[in-house]
Amino acid sequence: MANEARKSLRVRYVARRNAVFADPGFQYWAAKLPLINRIARSRAGNAFDLVAGFTYSQTLRACVESGLFDVLQDGPVGHQEVAARIDLSPDAALTLLRAARALRLSEEPEPDGWMLGEQGAVLAADKGAQAMVRHHQLLYRDLADPMELLRRDRKEPTALSRYWSYAGALHGAAERGEQTAEYSELMAASQHFVADQVLASFRFPARARLLDVGGGHGAFLRRMGEANPGLHLGLFDLPEVAQAGEQVLADAFGPERVSAHPGNFFEDPIPGGYDIVSLVRILHDHDDGPAAALLANIHRSLKPGARLLIAEPMACVPGAEGMGEAFFGFYLWAMGSGRPRSGEEIARMCRKAGFARTQSIATPQPVNASMIVAFA
Image (cartoon, rainbow, N blue to C red; front, top):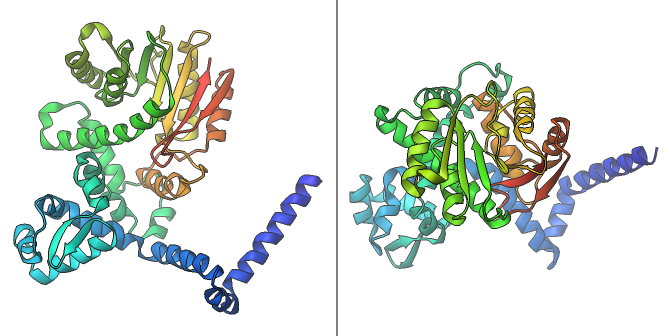
């Protein structure tokens, strides 16, 4: 009864708050008060960002696809030189430069002397992030009509699902050339963001054995191995992928530090004998049934005291709500599989799979990944 009363109070508060904020009289009054108007301006700016966000993302895409960042690294350069180097008219180049300036992607420290802005300098140095920007055009294509996307059967193909289907077919097939390289670059970029959060937040025992399930070509394991010289690195993935990943890791660390295990993590037993098993951006790719089956399969392989490390963007994380549920919610919907889950949801799934307890570990940048550790 007390819970119902609290819920009712919360509902009444939200309804009253919304009515007040929507009132034009309140908005006019808030804009006039010296202390309140700063809050009002901030909220108005946030509302406009919601309206204009697609333009911002496309401005970034134009900077990446045109090669503008490479040009501005040689700055300061005039807009006419920029135009010639990225094949635009001078007026079009100036429009792009000014739009990028508003997003801190470019900067004009002297009249018509253009250079990288703060954000531009970061992105220009991160080729992986640029690969993700180019990749997102598939999601934007699917989101051109968001209601149509939401109403369609999730098994119907989309631009994003077609990409991942094709990527899966060439997963590990180096002979496929440019497309494979693009896919590998995208995977390495996404793993890089998560790996940074793990390294900043989790300490591996000095001589531990780590198995990365669904570890691809070993990008995550390579970062862990570089930071932890005593760590033995195990990779579990489809046969052709595990073979390619084993070679990459063996070249980096020597074959004695690497074990590759070919298999399907839904159908085959997970290799035992590891102290820590990691799932890096794997769980949220799968619907609840397959995700629960994967957790149970991993639990069966673990000895008492071993741990499962789950690292991925999660829902309902303070400060990262937009990434967790808005971006990944629609991304995974368009992909046709999986959904973002909160830490509490994942913890419940782990306990149901047989894990004794779970621990949430804070990360410096939850927009890139949050972490749950489950104890066998």
